[in-house]
Image (tube, rainbow, N blue to C red; front, side):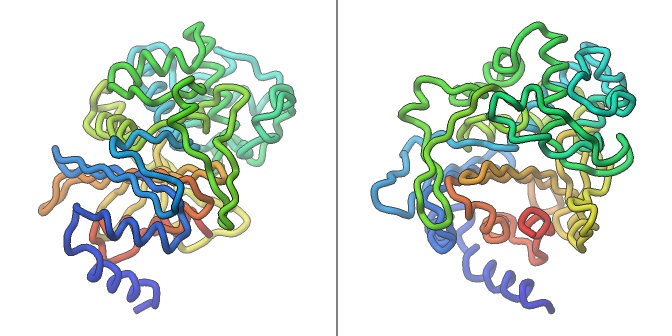
Length: 360
């Protein structure tokens, strides 16, 4: 047995005796990783528990779990859900060239750009880089985009693709993403503390992010709304979205199933394939791990440097109702705890490949 798996089993045996009342165990995990503040929501069937835990003096967890975090790439599944709702209503064709909805002037290769579809974007098969240039500075709007691969030929995780699809959606609707998200997701699901834009109440609710060395990196600011990474939210709010997504609220069964259906094996680094890649796939807006105990686990991770986030949805089985877990941290070390937190709540003996896929 591998050392990591042996440690993992010992970890589960020592920490999971009182699940889901896991406050002390979560505090231990966060403290050992050097995470100042962690916010967790866990749902099993109709029951949900929330945690907000500080491990440092001077940073108090809120009793109402209302501290707002950067969601980073957990923005993407929310936007994917919006796109799928639009597709179900016939507002956008998942397989139609996005050039029919918006311009392709930033792309160097216009022939490849004309092949891009919403489906390509959602399953990260655009062939685009993550970003053509850092997306916050003003010059990103006019930066040139070069393809890494031919569209529809390989997995290539891309925020740039999501930003391109965002422009198409905004052109179709004639409104900005925040207004669209309010109408499609935030208001219907009661996500009252979620926004792709900075809000006035975030001055007091939003938390600063920290480096691994404990340096305060600030709350962060974004120059524009971006479907790939600018969502701010809480674990309680995001759980409402995950339960709606996994339960089919606001989305018909065929379109929901498309999101959860594995389309492409997610080899994260084409030049360096890894063993963990063999277990990871991508659907339309969601990562999927094929796990020997938990089944097809839907997930996504978020990384905005000093803010790290993660969620997973585990299908029901003979002994458990559907289980959903999401956490947010204000630390560069936030992904170090994927194995520990998932083991605490899911009690799986075999570690998730997601941990290595994200970190290595």
